Each structure stands twice: as C-alpha cells, then as structure tokens.
Length: 254
Ligand SMILES: Nc1ncnc2c1ncn2[C@@H]1O[C@H](COP(=O)(O)OP(=O)(O)OP(=O)(O)O)[C@@H](O)[C@H]1O
Image (cartoon, rainbow, N blue to C red; front, side):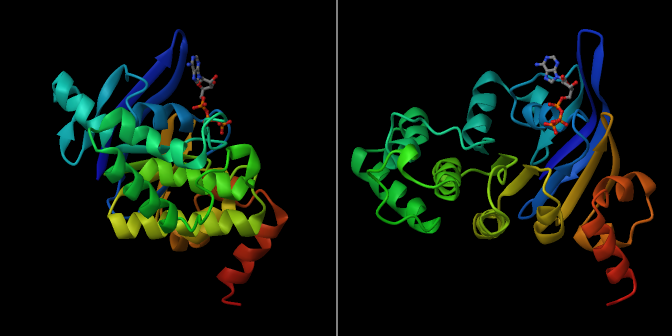
C-alpha cells in the first residue's frame, strides 16, 4: 500500500504537482491516467524516490519516506521494481545478463543462486531459450517481458511501470497487461502503472487515478469509469469515437 498526502512538486516557477492525495492498493494494478503534461511521470518519479517532493508525504506500507533513515531509504529502494518506458534494456548485455543485473547490484547472492533465480523469472514471463540472445535479436513484446523479469527478479514489494505497452500491437499489449496483473496477484505487490492505453484502463484498471493539472481529479475502477458522469474523466477517456460507442452500449446494457 502506498499513501500519498498533499504531494507538491515544482520546477522553478512551474508547479507540476499541486497537492495530490491518493492511495495505491497492495495486490492490485493501480493505474495513473491523464492528459500529457498532467504530472503522471513526475508523480511516478516521486514514488520511486527519484524526485524529492517540495512538500507532502508518501507512505510505503504505513511508513513515511521522510521519516526513514538513509539505510532504510536504501532498503526501500531495493524493494522497488521498475519497468521503464521502452524497456530500457542494456543493448550490450544478453537477456540473462540484463535480468541478473539487479541481483548483482543489490544482493550478495552466489552466481549459481542468481542463475537459478533468473531462470525462474524468465520462465515466469514465458521466455524460453532466450538467455543468450541480445535485446536486438528479440521482438518488442519479448523485450517487455525481459524488462518485467528484470523488475521482479529481486522480489519487489512495489512495482512501477511507465507506459509498459508503448510501441506494442493491441494483442501483445493485452498479453503484457495480463502478465503484469498476474504477477501483481502472485507476488502480492503494490503495482503502479502510468498509462495512455485505454484498453489497459478497461482491462486491468482495478484502481484508477485520473490526474488533471497536477491534482487527483477522479479515482475509481474500470467498472465505475463506464458509469461516471464526471465530465473531466469522460472527456478524457471517451475522446475516441470507439470508446464513446462502447460507453453507450455499456450504459444501455448491450
Ligand atoms: N526534470 C524536470 N524539470 C523541469 N520540468 C519538468 C521535469 N520533469 C517534468 N517537468 C515538467 O512537468 C510537467 C509534467 O510532466 P510529466 O512528464 O509528469 O507529464 P506526463 O503527464 O507524464 O505527460 P506524458 O503523458 O506526455 O508523458 C511538464 O510540463 C514537464 O515539462
């Protein structure tokens, strides 16, 4: 569980987060949606500890970040997994080396234990016989799987994903969404996903935060979002004709 209270962050004169209050639930896929520039990435980076907020608090399992000692902050960062936009794999490393990287950096595991843990997570994301391949030798969908394997290899408590579907065809995007959701359940992780993909919203949106101009403007789940009359949310979510038709069909019970 992550609780965010009155979070504010500015860059010089630009006020980006203007008092965000929200909760991200353990064991669920929590989505952040909103217009470009609404502050989604800045919020995600605050959650990851990459940006220091100007004010407000972030509590990770009921412990406020600013109350933690330096060592505790370091320990907390080890409990965080990140799926970067575009995968952000190391081109010069094989799939196995990419996934092993966090274990080398963050743990004192033996080479053998690291190898077997890497094997376990690569199997979990259904990547077989790719250990010795380089990122350039596998498809975009497979690269995302490697990125997910790398993010979960150190058994994180918190998983952050920045547009995990970008650049994928709709079917592969849906497979990746479902994989992230399954892993969230299996590992009982607090997963936070920054997304532009409305298919993800309707598929895995268990707790959706709609951010508008740096504030939490709406929060609900994929079932509530069909029915909400909050104009800001409907204008954003149903900007496409296709989704408008889906909404009408849903409301009419078709
Ligand atoms: N390091 C930074 N320094 C200065 N301004 C920044 C920095 N990071 C973000 N911003 C500004 O904060 C605002 C919000 O950016 P952010 O990347 O959070 O938007 P977003 O909602 O993630 O947009 P998108 O959906 O397009 O990725 C933008 O105006 C951006 O220019």
